[in-house]
Image 1 (tube, helix red, strand yellow):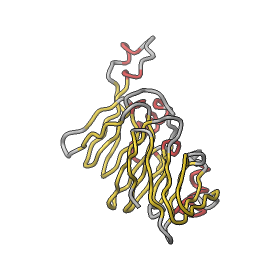
Image 2: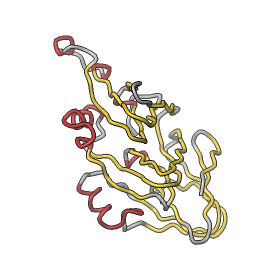
Image 3: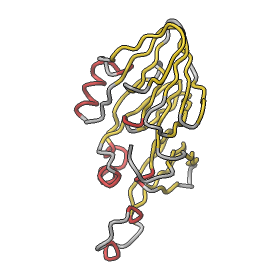
Image 4: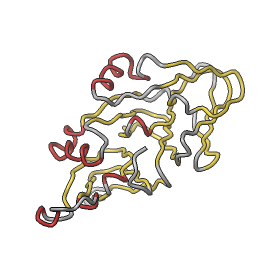
Length: 216
């Protein structure tokens, strides 16, 4: 059920009988055919326990289950949309950035501290994204939102990528994150710039960054 990009701010998805997808509530801007939209009370493909985990983590977002036979156009708030295809990978992305995704993908929640230790928790506070993030795993596609355009940066062994935590959108693959200071503590006194910190991602995968330091 791949997405087709209609413009930088609109995507279209084909819904076939027996298949389903999930979207943010209010993300549908138009559709053709016999399509139904129902509030999702099961927390997506991850089921009730996944929903409970995300609500405890403060990482839940209202979802609609989309089913039927037709095509649906999605967009939200005039944000730029990037389609990410997964082939058995796990995508880490903030729940409020998820526009729509395949029902075949398994949802979960990741504690940032587990991936980056104490600095992972600090990263959550500095970026304003909190201590938890949503995960999508399996084979399928997801449409994510951001301010401005989105750039995909490859992460390869021995060549870590550094990004501004405020510009971070999502990442996938076998990736570890670590927050580091670009300035000495003495230099940081009296400075409020986000450039004082860098998010270092290492391993094997990719990271998506937006052309803005503004949250959705």
